[in-house]
Image (cartoon, rainbow, N blue to C red; front, side, top):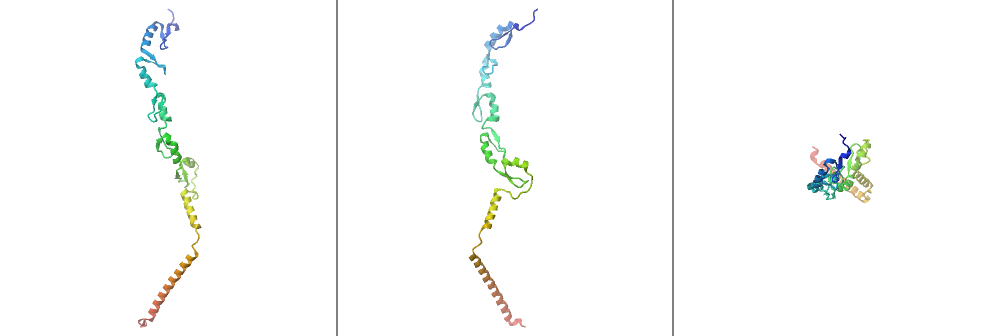
Length: 202
């Protein structure tokens, strides 16, 4: 008996599969009538399901977030990494928002300041991690927020105010002198009255 060789198989011209030579005619009749090769992936699918196979596997689909049309096999990647309407979180405040708005939001949010409790300085949120990495914890009251700077400027402005006019000072001094004189007159009258009272002699 002769050994089985490659010549004992034939390639089906419809599905490109190797079929035993003895069954090739029967296979081809069934294959060409019942199966159809997908033009996209090359899989053999039943003819009656060819349209469903294309729609469920290869037909372009629209992203439910941004309505962009794309191949079905990249839809998950698009929604997870590329869709401008996917929800992401701000790295500074953890507020959820669409990815398309993230850059503008973080530009503002990252410029907010918080007090570092190690060095008593106010630092921007975008610089917080690098600041904490190099912060040595030394108190430094000479550096503060813009609020502290404004308070210092107000104090300096108060020190720079000119002294009150000399006339105003003279008026206050005159009133003080009159008040003292009045009190002295009242006290003097009181003591003179007590001295003149005859009942005090007995």
